[in-house]
Length: 312
Image (tube, rainbow, N blue to C red; front, side, top):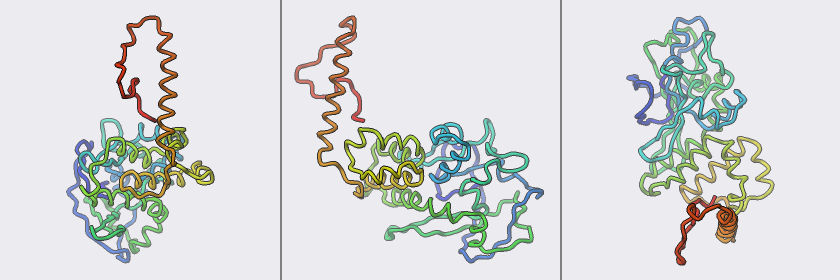
């Protein structure tokens, strides 16, 4: 299955690019398709995967498996860059030394209830597009016909919109829209927003894909030192979807300077005080070391973090 929401170049993907050219269609386009157990091509699309995951996909799948988002990312995905040295996406990792989906079983999908957006859409592709003079993305669909797929010959017809509803896609599109708009804005903005720093790219990845790690980050004292978030808003962070949407706001603030999360007036003073406190604790530890060989004297006029640690 080759099913992507964005046209991207994948340099190290463990599968070949598809030669299929999709046919552009509208939501009211009548299509003939059905996938069912017993069809001669059963599981063929899951045997050669190329599936981009949305943040909502990851939340659904990690909950289905009963693991953290961090563990899910490590075990079932690999990252890729939408463009060189740019924001990253996440793809499902196939089986070891193969191209089949890890969730494929002889009887079908092992996570069918919570299968990703791309799997629900197939053989329809969602192409989110935005022109440079537009502020929001537009949904355009494409019909993908691959030689191995016999579902196109099944006697079942419905419109693209009906197919989307039948596959439970509307909810996935709703929760995936903010992420698609974020990616599209970054791609369409180009050099006008400058090159994102490594820390900004790391924040994008964590906020979008690793919701459990992101929760630890936003509930840390270092985050609270900088951002002023109301207690009632913090209380919502126990909910993955609420936290996901807050993460999108924070990423937009960092990447595009869309200021929706207020800074604390004394943010810099708080960070410097925490840095000083940390250094004082480490000074006490250093003083107890058995030999001076471990410590080199610092110049009197040294103005830097002597323990070379970040402010977080």
